[in-house]
Image (cartoon, rainbow, N blue to C red; front, top):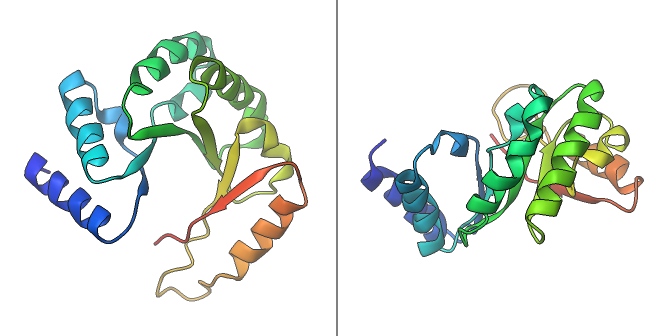
Length: 170
């Protein structure tokens, strides 16, 4: 996608009143120029970003010390408000994800760590500051509805003190 197309999409998102996104490919912004463009354009249109740069570290825990420097660099962009670090990981990854969260929290105070899962919320509490669930209720597929979201949020609410985030996706 060209820069003009990316800017056009971000402009439309901002004009539609949305001010937050998770782009599950920000780890592909490998050069400073790419990061300056993307995060700068997001900031231009009032869009805050949960950066997806650290999810792969659950597979390579020996590289967790590298996270702090990278997070500090990305935190310099005003559009970046936090870090997306997990999508549907198995429960055996919780200790590694907890280390990732603690490393990010120490390196970038004020930035939030978000994980996403549809399993039971309680075992995953150490993995994030905010835990999200994605049930994809907006779809023409049979069985798609918001009931799963309500159930998930009730379970998450029973785990206090914890923050939950739920945004229907398609």
